[in-house]
Length: 257
Image 1 (tube, rainbow, N blue to C red):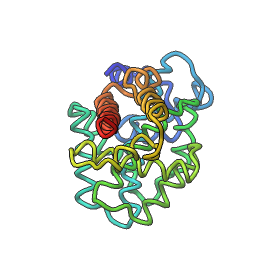
Image 2 (image 1 turned 60 degrees about the vertical axis):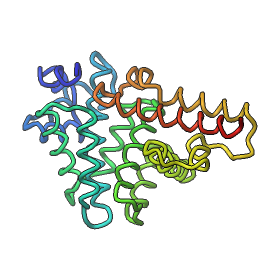
Image 3 (image 1 turned 180 degrees about the vertical axis):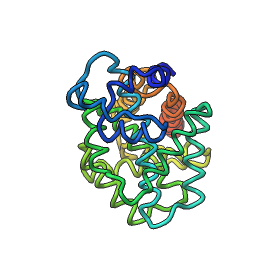
Image 4 (image 1 turned 135 degrees about the horizontal axis):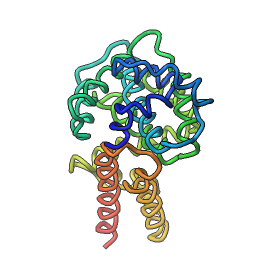
């Protein structure tokens, strides 16, 4: 929780501006609006770089989650439950949870500036593609929480992916990856789900399957994501994802004898 302590201590608040700073400040009842002018452009990396990326990830995750949940016209109980489940799995303290709920609600507002929020988030992440992909996977999983990916949600997710450097084909792949991973996590997966998680065809040879497995484990390794700026509180989500990937690989190996 180092980034959170830094934030509440005032140091991060001093340096964090832009739309993300405004959102986080409002969620905490603080004024971070001066941060952007005091430190230069929002993407500048100075002291506290790691904490800054962590704060940006936390802020963007929950505000965009609220925006996507509202994309189909209404926020369903399943979507609220999914957001609450993520908060619970992150073991947020009372103050962090309150901030996450406030950010989620801010994302539902009609005047939420998705484009500006994503622009700063991409700057802050500074080519950390695996970290951005983890963000997208969380958003897709939340959108799928009610068992349906509505047209409005898909449209928003495609737009988010495009702005963050993921084309439509990449987002389509993540749809399948997240859905199959959820099946792996539930213990009710099929062999087809296992191949979908690894992103390989059933006729792929053993070497190709192993290569895909190692690539995905590297992309989702909790320690590597933490080093890139994943908040400590979200490490459990990354760990769960690596367990899904490992389960898929083990299921495929068993099927091949």
